[in-house]
Length: 104
Image (cartoon, rainbow, N blue to C red):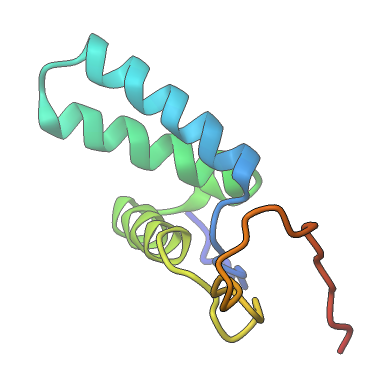
């Protein structure tokens, strides 16, 4: 196998990707009773879904590391990027949803 260098921007899953992940997770857990097989299937699913061109060339350790980083990022809140995440001081739930995108 030839040595290739990849520059991946490992990122969190989008909402749509997360929904696909959850659907697949439910399916796999119902079908397989071996935790190792569940893990292998989910690692492959996530990495191939997010990085389809690179996935076939990755070693198992690389795919696993990418999967764990994706999951870490997907389970964290970007508090520095999403301003005013806290509810208003009055606690009103009927305020209009306003999202502003900061351009850099």
